[in-house]
Image (cartoon, rainbow, N blue to C red; front, side, top):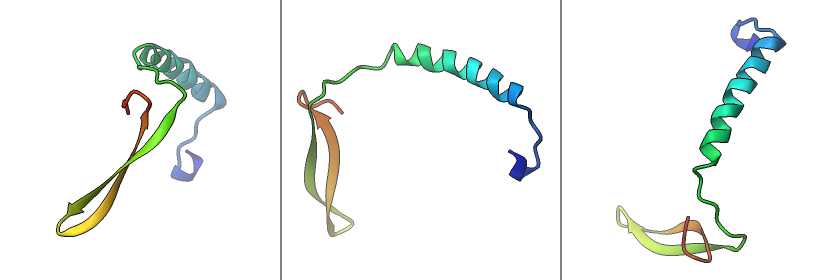
Amino acid sequence: MLERGIMISHTIIMRWVHQCSQIIEERQKHIKLTNDSLRIDEIYIKIKGKNAYLYRAVDSKGKL
């Protein structure tokens, strides 16, 4: 923040942490947990006439 010319104190940052941590905690309750088994799924596709690989990580049930 100082590089951008904004002067803030450590108490302002602490207030942001307290406010944002509550929001993050509420959102984590709605996140679907995956199991520990992950693998990489790759597909060979053509994009604008050029061949390319598409990668994605999936768990054992196929969820992203």
